[in-house]
Amino acid sequence: MSAAEISLWGGGPWQDPARVAEAGEVAAEVEELGFHRIWFSGGFGDGILPAFGDLLAATRTIGVASGIVSIWTATPDQSAAAFADLEAKHPGRFLLGLGNSHAPAVEGQGGRYEKPFSRTVEYLDALGDRVPRERLVLAALGPKMLDLARERTTGAHPYFVTVEHTVAAREALGTGSWLAPEVAVVLDADPDSARATAREHLATYLALPNYTNNLRRFGWGDEDLLGGGSDRLVDALVAWGPVERVAAGVQRHVDAGADEVALQLLGGRGEFPREGFRELAAALVRGR
Image (cartoon, rainbow, N blue to C red; front, top):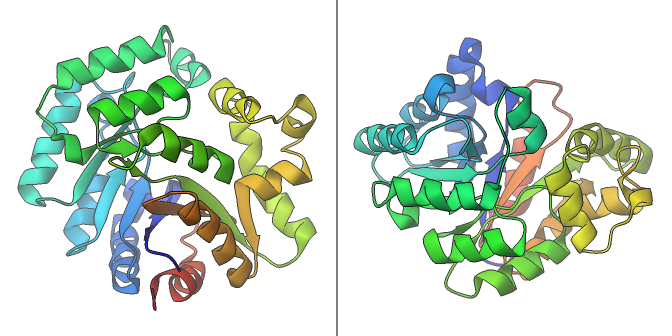
C-alpha cells in the first residue's frame, strides 16, 4: 500500500463509561496492530468525554483524536482547557478536531444553527494559540471550510465522502496541508448483505443537509439519496467486500491524496469488531 497512515474511526463502545476497561484493552491491541490513531466524536463542556484521556492512559504511543468536537457544544475555553490537560498528561498524542455539526443536532438540543462558517471563524479566533496549529484540524466538506482548514489549522478531516471529494479536498488544501478522510468499510463479500449493513449506517447521514448538499456538489441526485442510498452511492461511500477489495477501496483515497485514512468498520452491533480490526491491520498496516 502507498504511504499513508491508517487509523480507526469509532463511536459507541469507545465512549461508553461502563466499558472503560474493555475499551482500554482494545486500544492497547489496536496500538500493537500498528494503527496510527483512534478517532471518535464527542464534546467537551457539559458533555466532556473522559474517554479521550482514558484511551491515552491505556496505551503508550497511539494517537487519539476528536472527530469531532462540536463548536456548538464546547466553548473555546473548554476546548483549550481540555487540550491542555491531555497535553500535559500525554504529550503530543491528542489531536483536537473541531466541526460545526448539523442544524438538526444543534436545534434538537435547543440551540440556533446560524452562520456556521462565521461561527467557526469566531471560534478559532477565540481559541487563539492555546491549541497549536499542528494539533488542530477541521471537519471540512465544502470549499470555504476547506480553505479555512488550510489557512488556520493543520488540515481537514472530511467525513462521509467519496474518493472524488478526496481529490477535490487535496486540490483545495494544496500540498502543505494534511488530509484525513473517514472511510466506512464492511468486511462482507456478499453484495446484498454488505450493502444492507452499509445502508443502516448511511441512512442516518443522508438525513443531514450538510452531507447531502456536499454529495450534490459532486453530481449525486435525489434518486441516489433515498432509501439509504442507491447501489452506486453505497459503493462510492463504503468500501465493502473481502479484505482485499476493501484495501483497494482505501487505496483509492490514498492515491487521491489522503495522508491518513480513518477506517470505520461497520456491522459491529455495538461491540468492538476486534477480529475485523485484525483483518484490516494485516491487509493495510503490516507490511506497508
